[in-house]
Image (tube, one colour):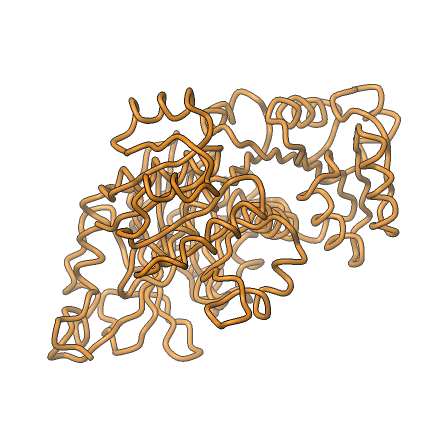
Length: 465
């Protein structure tokens, strides 16, 4: 357990507070909205402090002199930086994490932020907008996927696909992947059928509609997709984006210079003009993405991907639903309210993307200390993938020198792959764990006790130096 103070009770702050409290951390939440704090204090086992995050007296009330971690996640960059500056001036400064939305701050992070004399005291930056943009771009490049996670610094990928009738493996047993792709090393990590987890075995038959999560080196991903889906990666050429804000501008700037033809819809004329000046290769249209006539006029049926990324959940949901009905092949909507994620099947939208889940994953890697290098939330937070560095030797580690079978991981938890040096090793039961391995552990249905067991298992003994 660690002690955390979170400044900002917006969507990001609330989601992170809930996630940390569920893992039995000592959480204090600070905000100027007393009504919001009162509601959260009643629902969650957290302490709340009302007041301005930049008021030294409020910082005293939050007791930041006796915490392990400060998270400044308000909607204002300057507030978050000032909170970290003030927190750094106490006698025993905690770890400082700031949410920063301005792209320029992120581009110059190495120069601007750190603990040196002339730097702003921020240890780590989180940007939900950046995380969402990266996620959408990966999904555009792999249009058959419903979720893609890069592991081990991009050397391993975990991908979820909804199996359809056109997939070669659909209706067949998992063991047949090896027959179809004899030179591709992959492993099915989990199968979800009507939201129920199924532990994959060699004889498990993939059925249409199953969500199948598999793990492999990036170079093999495209080949594996053909086994499960009829969708091909090469078909995406035209992308329509609804919303010219932070995410929309980032998406356009990264997609338009490559092979994609990008059109951006923005209802605010001033923001649209700003986008037009900043994005010379993107076609800018002033108008509402929820206007069916406008979408028809802009030939929405000819677009392979429609992304709704405004700062309004309802606009994103409605516009994506309309775009799907009018012929867009694949639709995505960014939603901040986690309760909307339950509506996916009813809306007809292909993918709902939640910034708070990406942010929680980013924060958890700082909270879960020790050997854990990264935490990735999957399936709207139900599942989790952990990246863990193996420290120690046979004498100082619970896992070094043991085979995967001998780890006796809990039911529903599996070691899926190992990065050893630059080599990707897909897990099998007789694979022996070595020092400095980076292991990927998949938890099918996240349970606090299971996660705690995994962390304890890979934690080196007190004699490890």
